[in-house]
Image 1 (cartoon, rainbow, N blue to C red):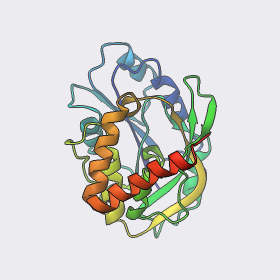
Image 2: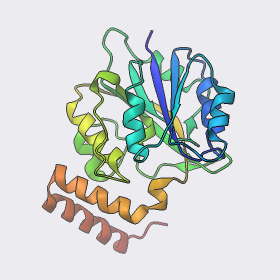
Image 3: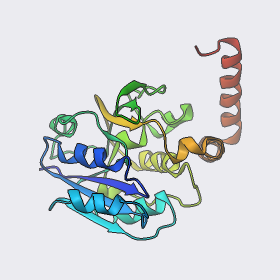
Image 4: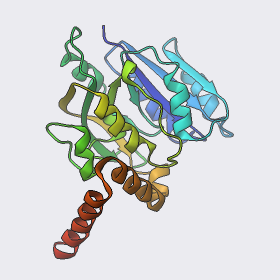
Length: 245
């Protein structure tokens, strides 16, 4: 039995949380707990959590210092072999996603990180397109030189490997965290499945400029200032020479 802890952090998420909860509860794989960390919402989010709570739900509603602080606190409540961070509005790709992923794993020799592809969906959950950055066949911590090539939600990590998100980053702590986790990991496993439907909005999207500045700083820290500058310069030149359609 390999247990999965799905962590969802919320704040005034009554419009999007329901489909996330339903997606977790509709999974055919039985060994899942859902941890919901609410930041003292003022709308009907808590009522929604109470409505759908089961014996596999663990939740708290209290003030926090932001999304990554809430994730840190939620992780301390987890008891699963793996952690998955699924934001309000995001869902698993289908009802058998977790079961298909777990069927690939050897319980006696579990990889440190399991990952897959992500589909982008609209507010109604309708498919829009696959993520622009395709998941690499072989993932290492250096893969993120190209950007966040694996979506945070499709990045499953063994619980003992978990380290807290760095709260010095307001919008891109997940980018820094993924790199740190990959540097610690020995075995990273590509499922070759589309695992997640990602809602095409959110804090990072709404604060894109600040997020990109943080990512540039993070990349400079791990990959060097010169290398990061040259890569971004080439990226700009490539767009000028051959604009994306």
